[in-house]
Image (cartoon, rainbow, N blue to C red; front, side, top):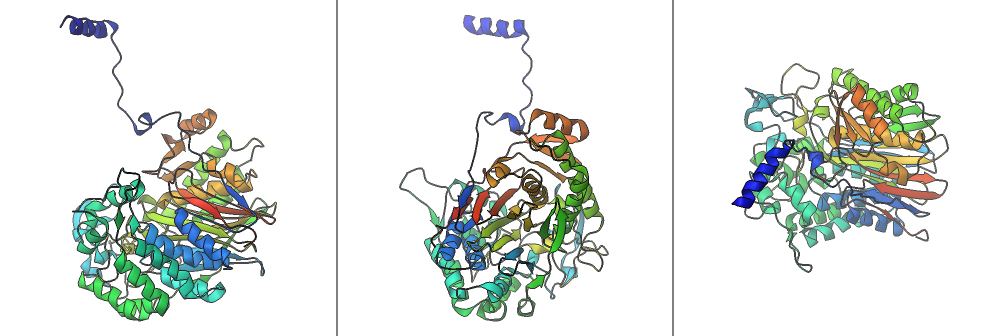
Length: 556
C-alpha cells in the first residue's frame, strides 16, 4: 500500500500529460519496411495479385502460348484462387498490344443489367442512404447490394472468348484446365484467406450455398498453427463447372447447360437473370483512348471506365507538372492532388450509361474489390487486364448448382428514377477499372492497372508519371510513395512521403496520412510490367501478401 501511494503521488506531482487518443498510424511500427523487388528477364513475365495464378500464366507462356493465352489461363485461375475479387461471375476489360502489327486494342466485357429486370422490384425505403460510403437511397432489403437481385449479366467468359478468337495459340480446353485442377485442390486457408472471408461473413451466411462454400459453422475458417497442418475449403461444384466449361466451350456459359443452370439458380433466389439475358451477351472490341503525354502515348479503355478521367488527369499534369531531376518533389505531389481532384469533380458532374453521358459517378464514392494483372511475352506482346465482382465476394451469392460466386453489378445504378445512371433494364454497369498500356518518349512500353475501387485512378496516374516523367524503372516506381485524392476534398498521403511534400499537402488540402498496408488498403494495389528493348520487368504492390511477378526462362 505504501508503494502504491508513492507511485500515485509521483504521477500527480509530475502532472503527466493525458495520453492522446490513438489513431491507426499510432498502432504500427515506425521502423518496419516492406519491399518486393521487381523481376527482370529476357523472357515473358506475368504480374498478378496471386503468385499462384501468375505461375499458371507463366506456364502457358513456357509451353509456347501467346500473351493472350496467358491472359485467359490466368483469368480462370484467379477466379478459383481469389474468389472474393473476380471470376466467371464478374466482368472487366483488357488493353492489348500486338507487337507484330504495332497495334493497340481494347476488349470490353463489362456487365449490364438484365433485360428482364423490373424496376418495381427495387422500391426505396425512405430511410436515407445505404451507407456512409454508398450514396444511393436505401432499397428495401438492400436488394441492389447483395443477393440474387443484385446480379448483373456477367462478362468474363465472353471476354475470354473474344480474346481467344482473336489471338490465342492454344486450345480453349488447355487454357481452362489449370483452373479445374486448382479447384480440385480446394481453397487453401491462410491468414489472408481468413481475412478476406471475414470481411464478408455477415452477408455470406445469409445464403446457404455461400455459407457452405466459405464458412465453418457460420464463421470464417481459421488457418492452423501447426507447420504441417492445413485447412482447405472444398470447391467440388466449381471444379465440375470449370471442367464443363473447358470441355463445352465458352458459349455454353451463355447458351447451354451452364446458362440454364445459372439462370435457374438466380431466378429461384428471386433475381431477374434469364437465359435470354445470357444468350444475348457479347464482349465488344473497342478502339482505345489515345492520350498524348510527355512525348509518348497512353492507351486506355474508353466510355464506362475510368479511362476518360485518366485522360483529363494527364492533360492537367502535362500543363502543371514540371518534373524535377531528383524525382517527385513537393510541387509534384501538389500537382498530382490538384489534377486528380479536378478530374474527379468533372467525372461526378456527368455520369451514367446515357446518350452523351459516358463519364462515371457514384462508384467513385463506394469501395469495390477487383483484380488486375499485366503480361508481357518474349515477342513484346502486352496486356493490361482488370476484372471484378464489384464488391468483396460480389453479391455474396454463390450459385447452388455450379458453385460460382456472382457479381453485384446492380449496386452501381442509382435506384432513384430520372438520373443519367438510374437503374434500367439492359443498361451497362459503371466501373472504376483503368487498365492501361503506354509508350514513353524513350521507347519503353508499360502495362499497368490496379485493384482498389475508386483508388485505382490515382495509382495508375502516378505510376505512369513516375515512369514517363521521371524515367524510373519498375523497382523504383512500385516503391515510390503515392497519394490518394479520390475521397472528395480529402488528400491522403503515404507516411513515407518526404517531409516537404507532406508539409505542402497539409498547407493546401484537407490532408490525412495513412500507411501502405494490407488491410484495409488506403492506396490501390497495382500490378505492372515494362519492356525496354528486349528486356522485360514486372512488379506488384509490395504490401499485397500474395502478389508477385513471375518470369519465364528466356529459352522457353
